[in-house]
Picture 1: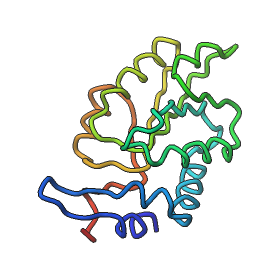
Picture 2 (picture 1 turned 90 degrees about the vertical axis):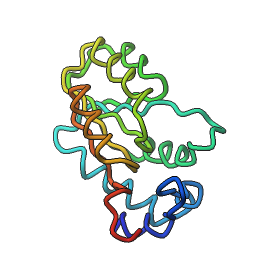
Picture 3 (picture 1 turned 180 degrees about the vertical axis):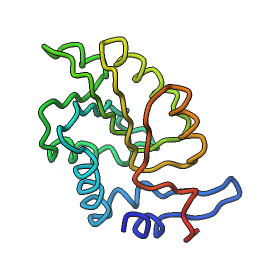
Picture 4 (picture 1 turned 90 degrees about the horizontal axis):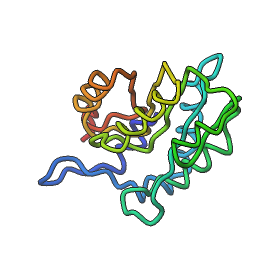
Length: 161
């Protein structure tokens, strides 16, 4: 379902595939499906969920309001938002952590966030992105950083484009 919705916002360009995140962010069906998929992927017992801050106003962060909506919807025992270092303010540091990101492109900022969480005692760090632009790069990143990483929609694997 999510792939079909996203396919309506994808276009081929000279530089590859471009996703209209601004349009996608306004799609109510997409928003509902993302929240449903993330909730389903949490499993039981639910890990500590970390939703890193995004820079408001940055052009590539159109899904920021969806991330805020997701944070309000999640029924988890431990939720950390904002700076990943807020994890250290918890009385006990959960070992299982799920980082939720809007998209995966290169992982530069994500690499530091993972390192910070591991330094603060998280032993099992997973990453879930709404959208991955390059599945191979994402999987390589997971291997290099010893984390399980996945995306709800992998744009480069879409047949519709």
